[in-house]
Image (cartoon, rainbow, N blue to C red; front, side, top):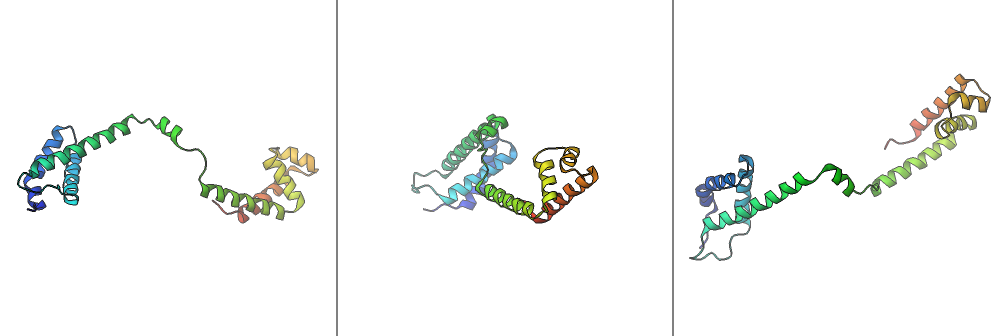
Length: 165
């Protein structure tokens, strides 16, 4: 003896929503769980479809289980602190990020090697050696304006040669 899911839905969906509302769910959540109940019953109907089967009781049992699962999930979400989540997350970069970084580094090395020696030295001393423009100018025996021009040329060259990841 098969059951008619449309008839069950028509007869019992409003009752199930009220039942779920009394269990503390919002109207939207109750409607969602009701739909999930009928989907679950449709996907896996009860095994013993005989004279003893009570479809209404089965619907209530499925909705009760789905309701309990929903409440468990909600309690986990509410008790999870965002600070705890950052401790759980793996801080190591993904394989894709590592590959991209390596490609960017290789492009940067190549672009630096392409620069004229004085431009490369000025750029590296300022950017990598963390020296001021005045310190670089004194080291290279150049004016600060010319030194800044060399560093700017280095930046421009790197921006054109290194992909933006």
